[in-house]
Image (tube, rainbow over all chains, first blue to last red; front, side):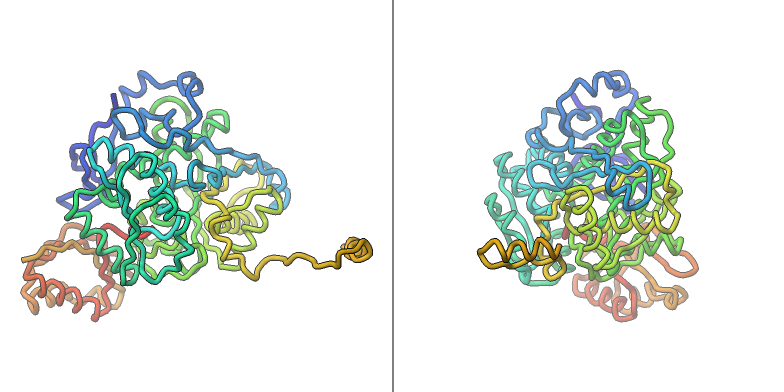
Length: 409
Length: 79
């Protein structure tokens, strides 16, 4: 049995039943899942949690499903790595990397949210799931819909290079290429959601989908020995992850699993698509949409749905924000690979680069615990590195030729 | 008749202009304000527009041409 009380508007707090709804019919504010925390407190403890299987569903009372999950049984519980080599480079004492570049099954953080969305969609009785995506979301929805034996539609702009979605097409979804720009694809998908009885994971299932993000911070807290980090650097696209990181910490506190929350939360975006960072720096709670221009495609959301909540999360925590140029993103990817042996995608390059900047600026102190969020795998965005990394050294097939280059090194 | 929910972002130079009213009058569209945030440099307005489908479309086009950023309230969903 689940512990969901229903949905609640994040703006006016009006309550709604737990149905596939996503926007308040009065103020058009986004809806969020509300839980019976008293009930959950009676059944969840540190001992209960640590005795469970290591996947996102160990936190099932805090996730919005009523029955058993149908996908994501191996998703989550990714490594929290003590990054001493990177810490040495950055001159800090205690640094961790939460590494979702190895999340099952499609090597990104999206596997957490999609596991919840598809399990919930099946509970609602949908037989078709859909998304609009050019990357990680398409991969995860396609893979998990295949596992759940559900029909799947993925919408992309028609001018997208086909190579970008091979990792999604392999799972057999219906890929629909829309002859229009990004805004037109967005608009069409909203119209489709209103017309067809489909589970569009980040539209009508969004309140449930977004809850999966909380497992990322639950795991960090558990892996730190039931402690929150003092600083956490989070990538921002639509703004959902960063606000759910705060929600997850508050929930653990409500349940008595942790005592204090003294975490400062930092937003990281790519320069060329940094509407949330700009708002934080300008102290403006209104997010001004932008036309994205960054190599961090997985963060290229010009009009973030949860931008205001991302802004509030950061400012309420006493944190700050910064952006990384394309060159800094590539340097961030290289730095993490060179020091920790982790190959992250461009979004991870953004968080590493922004963490480095904030440490250098003295915004993040050097003697406190820091977590850098890594949300995807570098094998997916190799094109961003073209012409920006060292080439192999060529030699003739003889020992002299080899010895020559060895001595040059 | 068509109903459309939109989020409008007004840059500073347009905050003092009664653009929503002008659009409503010109295209016979009924705007229903559901939510608003206004600072001294920027304004955000969430509206439901009600009218003939082509009038709603022309009204939105009028706002865009005037320099207002008109977006769906769901935000970008191409992720």
